[in-house]
Image 1 (cartoon, helix red, strand yellow):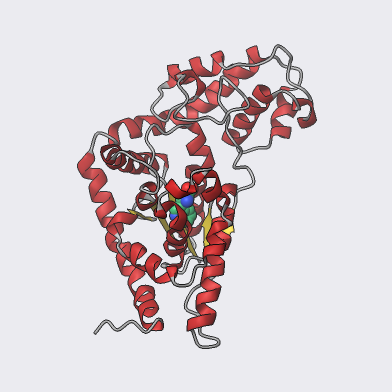
Image 2 (tube, rainbow, N blue to C red):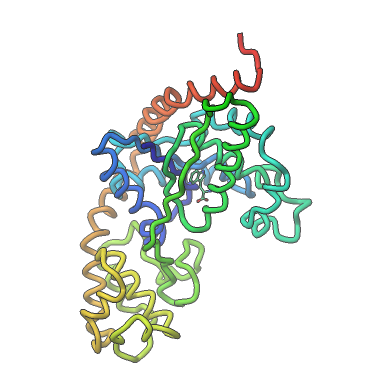
Length: 339
Ligand code: TRP
């Protein structure tokens, strides 16, 4: 079993990033590395250049993201933690797979359609071939399982299609080169919404800092944000159906459930009939308990650029070793002579 996943480096990480992806990575690491499976987690910095970006910011975000991942529990001794840019095999394999991926397949990608919008002519070529790089990311390591959010499912299906076509076109019967990876989509990867508006996703770009819980927030800030979170005046209902039409209440209950590792139904069973005056302090304490130690580590680690670079360098070394055999076999399968 080999687990591979990537995340784009963004700054100002918040609760949505933690519950959406990072926590799941940590769980898989702890569960599977104990059973001898290898986990590879990388920062998709090469993907980040598919949209207009600021180079200084990208470099800073890459280091911040490493700090966040390690603070949240990714252990560079258990998992291979690296950034794509230090493992050129990702780019090489992408080019090799560009011969197999079809224009029609990429044209159907909903993320491409969404991000390019009406201005396809002006979109970068990188944005269009983004899913081929993503396929290379996982096929390079013979990934068996790829934890991702629901929005990445289509890209994973494309990776399977590319692998299958390549195996068909260039490999002897019964000797496929690429493993077909399975996506793992955590059921509880709840969409964490803004604390000010239950219909908008929690986002680092929301102008109001009160809308999100940052991974850098201390206990006081967390408590204050939860207490000031927008709600309605009704007490909590007995069942999940009772949350319909109450997006803010639904969001807070969802956050509680995700943090406590239970379901919204269980949370409501516990808090049925209670008002937010009681629920919010309980939620705040739960958040503080889990996030405060991470936040403390994060604030410290993000100051130490050298340590962060050392973590990435060490991860890249291991990733390059693991990637080499598959890359070599791919060149060979395509008839590319390399001496
Ligand atoms: N495209 C993914 C996202 O935006 C990030 C990513 C890049 C990724 N390469 C990957 C995820 C490979 C899983 C596997 O979330």
